[in-house]
Structures are given as structure tokens and as C-alpha cells.
Length: 299
Image (cartoon, rainbow, N blue to C red; front, side, top):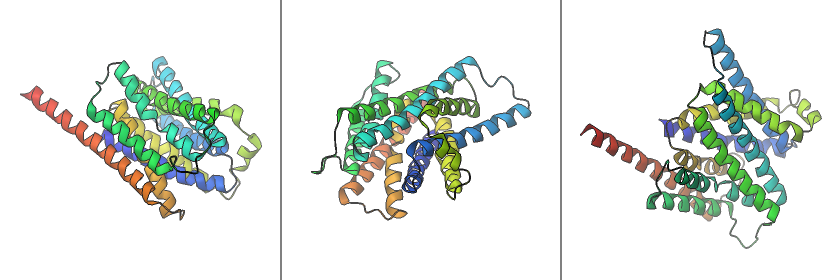
């Protein structure tokens, strides 16, 4: 169940990526789209916290929960901001490819912290995932995207921010409830995004014809997806969550094909298949290993 929740959260992120594309095509800036995504998530989690308090729950916000959740929120904001900077300085293909080096970073940190031991299987999963991303984005093609130093640096910082919020959310989950942790994280994200916004554009959203799409985008991209991801993260290793989240780019690609009429080349389809197979194989192997350990302990 934890793995399924992580996968469902990533699946919703992929769908919300398609919605974000629709909103940006309508003329909204990436910063404003990101801001409203986080704000809707904050409103959902804030309402949940108020309901819990009214029901008699106390002491929701210990200092450890606030510290780890704030760090996760800055990681979420950094992931999105650096991702868009990488796109502006290079291309979408470069930005996506670099951002999804995050599983490699998560594995390396897990090995350094000795929470996991490196295995041939985990190394092959990392390799397969990276190959799938490269095939899907077409970064290898002859019409080479602009690989500027700023684009590469921003893309890697986006991946580092991704890894940061995975580890921070994992730690926050040990010190409090899901709505409390996410409300703090979304508040930190809003604070981090505030200096980057055109507030006149932000103010136009509620009265615009696209307001309902912003609401759907926020509910799917932050409110429900982060709840599923955070809840699932409590029961899986950070590296498992990082690789399972590779469902997101595959979902975003399929969204473009099925709903936006974008064509999928054979190599792109192959990339989607490689990602999904790698994720499935990793999680099946993890479940079998856990079952073997339980049987050994019972014996």
C-alpha cells in the first residue's frame, strides 16, 4: 500500500503537469501556475488541521515537525523554480532529464548514510530509469538542445531540491501528522516563491475563466497528490520513493498523447515502457525481500 500511494501521488503529478501545460499555453506564467498550485494545497491542508484542532487534537506543531517540513517546503519550491530556470536557459528535454537524476542522488545519500546497501539490482534500476528518461525526452537526438552551463546547473539544482524534499518529508513524517507537516511545507513554499511573482498576474486568476482549471490543478497537483505521496513515504525507503516517482514523467507524456494530441515517437514510447518496467521490477523485488525477512524472523 505505501508504494501504491507514492505511485498514485506521482501519477497525479504527471496529470497536473499536463494541466500546467494547458495553463501556460493560455498565457499564464510558470511562477503564477506554481504559486496557485501550492496555495490550493495549503488551503486543503490548513482546513484539515483546523478540523483536527476543532475535534480536540492538540500539539500538532512540534519544533522538529516545523523544521523538517519547512526544509521540505523549500525543497519543493526550489525543485519547481530551478526546473523552470533550466527550461528558460536550455530546453524542456534538458530540464526533465537533469531533474530526474534525483533518484541517483537519493541512492548515493542513502548509501552514505548507511540506510541502504548498494546492490547490482538497485544500480541497474538507476541505469534503466536514466535510459528511459533520455529516450523519452529525445535529449540524444541530432537537434541537440542548448546545453549551457546555467541550464545544466539549474537542472542539477532542481534534482538536488527534489532529493531534499524526499528526505525532509521522510523525517517530518516521524514527528507529526500528515496535514500538519504539509501545511507547514506549503507555507514555506509560498514564502520562497513570493519574491519571484508578478502579483498583478496572481490577482487576476480568481476572476479569470481559467479559475476552475487552477483549482483542479491545485487539488490534483498539491492537495491530494502530496497527501498520497507523504503518507506512502512513511512506509518506504527514500530511494524506493524516488524511483517510483518516475511514474510522473511517463504519465505526463501519456497525458500529452491522449488528451493534447501530441504524437509519441517509437523511442519515446520505449522510454515510457522502460521507466514503468524498472519501477515495477524494483518494487516487486522490495516486496519479495521484505516477505523473505518476515519469514526468516518467524522461523
